[in-house]
Image 1 (cartoon, one colour):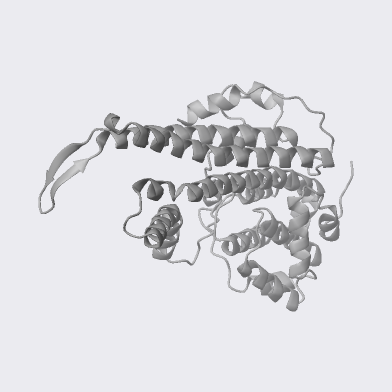
Image 2: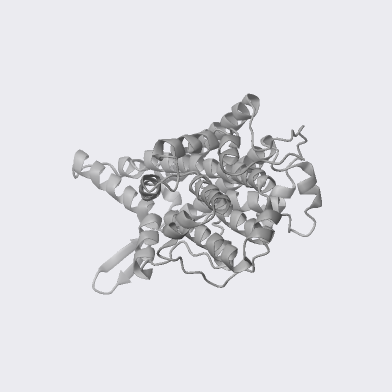
Length: 381
């Protein structure tokens, strides 16, 4: 199915835009277009859930004779009336809604990519073999495919965690929608009593699915903005780093070890994979000519090593740490605790409020020049 969705993306009309040199910055008109596109898509996603419920239950209650059942004799239970027509019809509608919602997501992510200048007509035209990186990124975000390629570089966000804990957390996330619908039905049933009409029970979960559809679309499009603006920010940072200086002044093994520690430290705080963290690790390792590792164990005394490292190298690592906390668009309690610890020890001068401010600035599409200039002098060509 991925090939069909990619074909759908390739067939979308190419949109030309005048792109300035500051791709990490968003103008007021671009921001307005982004928010308009995002909230329109959220509204459409919400309406899709309403149409789905109406298309499912209106014919069922208006024309009950269409929905035949067959009786099955089940051991230790007795006769069970299987509503096979209703179940088949429900399945068809569910698949149609999922595919429609997916195409809506792909189209909206594509629009956001065009508005910001991340995706151009050239990207669509040059994607002859299906290997255009930016088009693939847009498709992955639209399909909600998590990029786990960090593991190819030996960086594991779940290092030190129990496998059973990871499995339990993922299972609960996947079941939350189902569990929520069951709870809603139970509450409505208790409130209305045993005489509750089946139609009311069936439609009682519609607001929940409206909320889930709309909120799910909002989160996906927020993630699209994070990925697009994050990759612009990474490009800006790479332009500022004087790679020859670091390679000429620090031993390759020492440089490799502390950079890997820094990337792994960020991954462990995040406890999840993210496309921007993968791009950051990939490009940094390539620029520093560091060979990827199959695995890397974060040293327990990493912060002490960072604290005692040469100033310019320490500043580079601190910038990477700040970027790591920003690039997925979130700032958790665990990360805040680490910032408090590093600030107290004098490793960084920023406190939680400062990093939160950087995050808000990043999400608004504003430049991060102040942060970059603080730790690395930008060389203009």
